[in-house]
Image 1 (cartoon, rainbow, N blue to C red):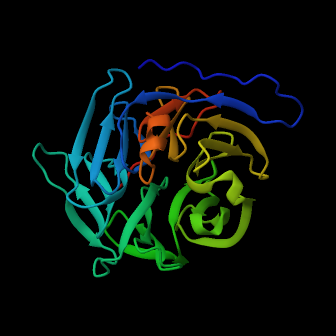
Image 2 (image 1 turned 45 degrees about the horizontal axis):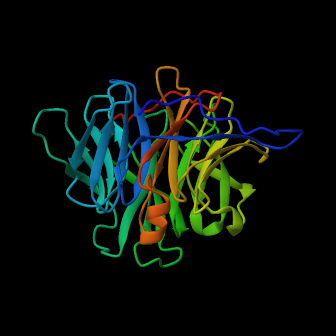
Length: 309
């Protein structure tokens, strides 16, 4: 399906956020679509369907899509600078080599002895480290952690006491890490050392009242603003570094999960979504649930980053 520039909602005045609507570009019908990331090597979008253990690659230019079976639930995917993929899976971090016929191999187990845990959302920093967190499938509070996989294969915990590790990304100067633990109903901001990856003091960027939805995945644009998917609200919000809401993207589905910028000019915002937990009546009203959506919001994203290992 062709994608337009989105639709500006009339009536924007003063401090009222500018609104646009995203369009369905791939009717994927994913149960729990997540973790979109742009692969600049071949101008495709990578994303996952978590519980299905599926890694998808979508070409906006041709509409073609391919799917890889990871062999277990997979929460996030990253492209590798040397070719192939890196995955944050149920049992830890895995790698897929670029050779034809290669299979995913677990290279860094993370909480693999805990059957009630799995890895969730993740992203690479500009030094090529792959960050991803864990969450309890039984919804036990504060049972998860945020981890960092180094290019040499070392894994170290970054944050503990996390309930639902979700979106993360860095400011354009790499000195602030934006992070979502969905259970805390907001977006946190940490001081960050771009060389070592260490994080320091934490502050709250924005509180998200339950009436606005549940904070999920996020991405940062070239202006340093945070785009946040709101599960249950059918929207993606853009917040300035001061925590001010200034743009809204509306979707025709209630459960957007994450977002990222892609396209040749990094000017297209791609949004994944979920059909999980929707009733038959809700699915009938949301035929695009679980699909991939896109909009041109009038700003650019930051260059995509891959795993250096």
